[in-house]
Length: 297
Image (tube, rainbow, N blue to C red):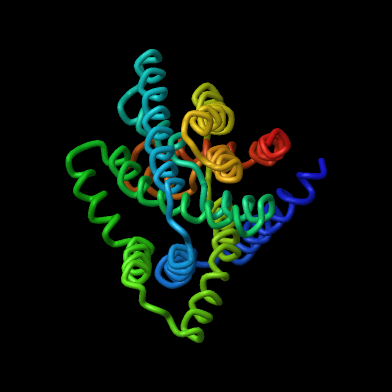
C-alpha cells in the first residue's frame, strides 16, 4: 500500500487533474500536444541522449523492444486465428496490447520509483517505443502496403526522431554546448513529462465507449497488464543488463495501452471502439496492477 501512495497516487492525481480539466472546460488537445511534440519532447530527448553514456545496455534495450513486440504480435495472431477474428479485430487487439504507454504514464512512474538514474533508461525506452509504434502501429492500423509508406513518413516527421539524431551527432563530434543553451534545453525538457501526464488525463476524458466486448477486453487487458511484464521479466533474465535497467523495462512493459493507438484506430477505422475501451479499462486496472509489479520488484 505504501508503494501506491508514494509512487502511483501522485501520478494518478496529475492524470485526474487533466481529466477534470477536459471534462469541465473542453480544451483543444491538439494544440497542446503539438507544443509537446515539437518543443518539449525534442528538448527532453536531446538532453537525455546528449548526457547518456551509451554501452551494451542500450543495444540490449533495442533487442528487448524488438523481441517483446514480436512475441506480443505472435500471441495476438495465434489468439485471433484460434477465435477466427476478422483482420480489423486482430489489428485492433494488436494496437491495444503490443504498444504500451511507456511515455506519459511509464516515465513518471519510473521517476517516482527509481529516481533520475532509472528515468534516463525510461526516456530512452520511450523513444524506442515511439519509433516502433509510429511504424508498426500505423502499419497494423492501416493493414496494407500504404501503411508501410505512411509509417515511414510518420517516423520521419516526428521531431523527437531528429532530436535523437542531432544529440548523437553533437555527442560523437565532441561538440560542447554552451551552459546557457544547455540550461534552456533542460528547462524546457523538464516540462515535458508533467504536461504529457495532464494530456493523458485529457485524452481519457475524450474516450467514449458505447458498448464493451468483455471477452476481447479481458484477453487484451490480461495480455497487456500481466502477460507483457511476465514476458519482459523472462527477457531481462536472458539478456545481459543491470538490475536497475531490468526493473525499468519490466515496469514499462506493465503499463496500460498507449493512448496514441486510439487515434490510429480512429484514423484507419481499425475497431476504434474496441481499442478505446481496452485503453480505458487497462488504464483503470493499472492502478491496481502497477503497485503489485513494483512491490514484486
